[in-house]
Image (tube, rainbow, N blue to C red; front, side):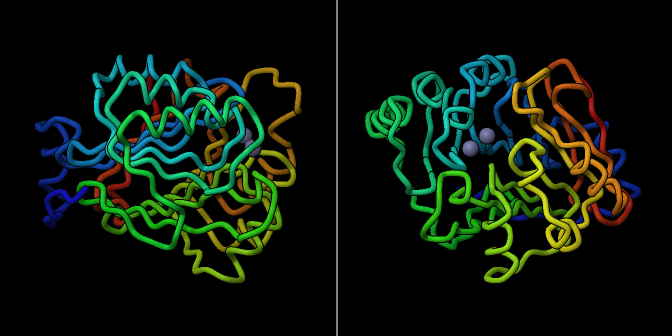
Length: 275
Ligand SMILES: [Zn+2]
Ligand SMILES: [Zn+2]
């Protein structure tokens, strides 16, 4: 997964480039897909594609609509059905080069089908060790989960970096895992946070908000879900540090979508959501 190295663009020519060139060559794209009460995040850069979670078979429809037939890296943050329920469809309907999960088997038939599909797909399995994976000119740093814990607190963390831009995705991590990373890893300020555990009260802590202080916080959540996600208090916490909160159930019919230039932190950060 080694793509061409980034080259610096000035802000003045960057805007023109954005107008003139196709998506993949010049910018990082993050799509938080609306897959109901589930998770799925697409990351594209320089023609390379990563998919973080596929909680619904609807993900394959999104991939087809975007004409994506090869995925360089699929990550299952953890093995709950709302994060892997669409994996067999993805593995059967696309070419997946690498598959990384949290390394913690689950007891469900959904997990058994998924891991079987991984082995028959030809994808190379990766464990969630501390490593950095290149995706075009973006880098994805894996934040390993603690060695013990339930599925949610064994979610794989991903720090997506592109130039000065950073986004942090942590699956359904709850307060113990967030605290583990704060104590044992380096958690930087970022531009975008995927709010953990669908905006549940137990997926956001004051210390986590203070460490990451994003400009944008995205909550992947289903309309009228029975869990009561997201927590109003969680939304207030993120807004309290100036983050704009986007929700996949409210902000767009299909997905919350950003295209981010590699000069993101120098005011060229152009957050745009659209269908
Ligand atoms: Zn979940
Ligand atoms: Zn979960």
